[in-house]
Amino acid sequence: MPAGSVVAMTHASLNRRAVLAAVGLVLPGLALAQPAAPISQAGPFRFKGWKGQDTDAERGFFEVPEDRRDPKSRKIRLSYVRFASTAARPGPPIIYLAGGPGGTATRALAGPRFPIMMALREVADVIAFDQRGTGLSNHIPERPVSTRPLPELTQAGLTAYFREDFKSAWADWTRAGVAMTGYNTEQNADDIDDLRRHLGAEKVDLWGISYGTHLALSMLKRHGDRVNRVALASLEGQDQTVKRPAAVDALLQQVDGLLAADPAIRAAIPDLPALMRRVHARMEAAPVKMPAMLNGAPVELKLGGFALQLMAGGLIANPQTLVMLPRLYLALDAGRTEVLTPFMGEFANIPGVAGMPEATDLASGISPARLALVRREAKTAVLGEALNFPMPQLLGVVPGVDLGENFRAPLRIDHPALLIAGTLDGRTPMSEQDEVAAQFTRKSRVIVENAGHNVFEAHPDVQGLLVRFFRGEAVADARLSLPPPTFGLG
Image (cartoon, rainbow, N blue to C red):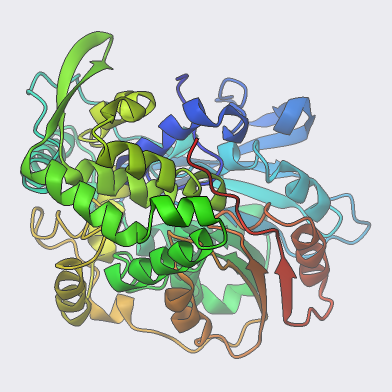
């Protein structure tokens, strides 16, 4: 599929979520619009938005050290797009923080969130900030196409391959003068404060999702006096880079309960988690050979159960793809592996290393207590340790980059906050989000029944709530509702 045609249900990193791009082949209406060719010069331009819409915008740049802790590190230029407010007296600039890590803000706001961005201009300037290592803020050189043979897509095969490749990539980039140690969430948060100064703003508002909320928490911890209010969706806490397998199991049990509404599906699949475990175990023990294309050349992949766990970890992010699970696993259980054909291009790209996503996740790390819990739960969990690949698999590959326990420690947050979550979010499960929400003392929570990870655009009322919140109006706790997903076997 075309470069940049990412799935609208996720803004996670390309490495952890490469398989999701294949969903666009199955459900093309869910693909994000590809923005116009990047504009490398500062100044006004016409921003290409969602479904043929466009608007006036301004591209801007500012410079920061690649690693503020290293006086010898190079300066890098960070990019943003400013959408000017239509208000007579605009409030603090609203900075959009994309997910991932590795998501590109300008691409995200060219997709289904474009109408929300346009509505928020009634309140203040909206700033789409491409974080370091993404979009026009990416100064990590592309590596030559790898000539290494692809590994078996099993847990052991992918883990060994990825650890070796990332270690080699880190060494290559370091020799090229890239301060890879600077690609972490603390430096990213400091970039936001530098952006605030560059914009001439006393304070800023933050609007983020997924990893963007992880980043927002770091901004609040490091520069909280420069933040006015925050609207955050699909929360990821400072010690939640690696999600708990048990939380995902709980979601799959919830999905299994939904299947009971259709007697035909219930008869065919008495227990969805059991079906998934059975397929994973069989394919991990005896990987299936499948043809694929990689860099224009045919290759043969050996798909183990771990590859399916990676795929499922992407599909459970949102209901629109979650509904594919029963059909896929029932077919695989019957030996019909051709159902994986639409995903093969993305399976072939799983081992690729991007740079910023892996470095950022590795630096955020995981506390020893949580790591022990995750590994204990993963032994019996449906998706094992696949949901967060390549974490925690990368731990220890590059020593000395972990930001430490102080970074991961929770904090008390007194800023006004609007927190939005979907009850069918398989990327940042509700139980994990509840832990983060408890840190906010002045919050309003909006729960959207049957929405997934990309909850901002899931329900039409969310846009109005965001506008009211950033305008400074009181927003009460609310529970919105969407129809439950419809599953099928055909």
